[in-house]
Amino acid sequence: MNLEGLQCLYKPKDYASSQEVKWCPGCGDYAILNAVQKAFSELNLKKEDVAIISGIGCSSRFPYYMDTYGFHTIHGRAVAVATGVKLANPELSVWVVSGDGDSLAIGGNHLIHAIRRNLNLNYLIFNNEIYGLTKGQFSPTTNFGTVTKSSPYGTVENPFQIGELALGAQSQFFARVPDTDVKLMTQVMVEAEKHNGLSLIEILQNCVIFNDGAHDYITSKENKLNNQLILEHGKPMIFGKDKNKGIRLNGLELEVVTIGENGITEKDILIHDAEAKSGALHYLLTQMKLPEFPVALGIIRNVKAPVFDESFNTQMKEMQAKSNLKNLDELFVSGSTFQIH
Image (tube, rainbow, N blue to C red; front, side, top):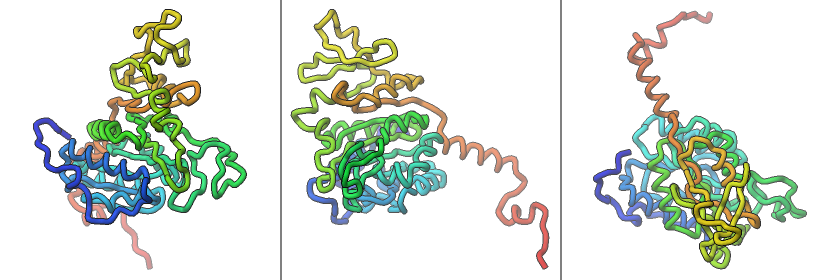
């Protein structure tokens, strides 16, 4: 989509529908809704040029609250509908809104193939590490040992790491943002729309009722400066309250170093290259965890690659041009036929 030279058509509030928002007071979903509306305004998206597709879950009420086209589909099947929408109308900006349970449990197979195919979609995963709508069962991203309604003695499953899963499925655009930073969310969503291909954004979203504070160790005011690494393409990976911590490559592994100690200078710090074809370093960034590392936020990977829907439509037009069949009726009578008596 060419965004140059356009004037802003709508303010963020113009994308809001007339529906009463029915998320719990304090839910992180409000901030995400705010960020999406801001991003759409910055992108100058016409409301009739947008389709928002959701599965099932608290997050998936999203289409009701947007004054755009939208589908509230069935559990784990948002990608299937979004794929059909995009193939039928390639000019639409299609956004999939889903939670960690919807995307990674019943919809897991659909998600990994959508990533592999590189459909031109924007995919938002609200990751609150719990099933909130069904009142607190553990999800595929719930941390090992967490006590929930369905794991009263603690989970005995290792959770999915969404970034690891995405890059393993050949994701060409992956970002992670917290719901506490609307400005960063908006910036990343704008870049996601500009990216040609599937843009996957993991949003660290807080469920105030069933998993409150799950991301506080990353997002709280007292923790965020030391525990967040905000990545910017072309800039050094520096973080910390005093901006004196950085990420360095030591052999095949990352390490945290302090600028000014042991001869370390800013020149020793890695420069983030989100556009590097190799995903090796991007994978390492998705793996960084506390307490050894800060958590990497922002756009981790943003690489150009062939896009499924473009290839599909090109192939279809080529075959139509070569075919002697001009309509469905001709197709029905074109081959061998037989009669059933």
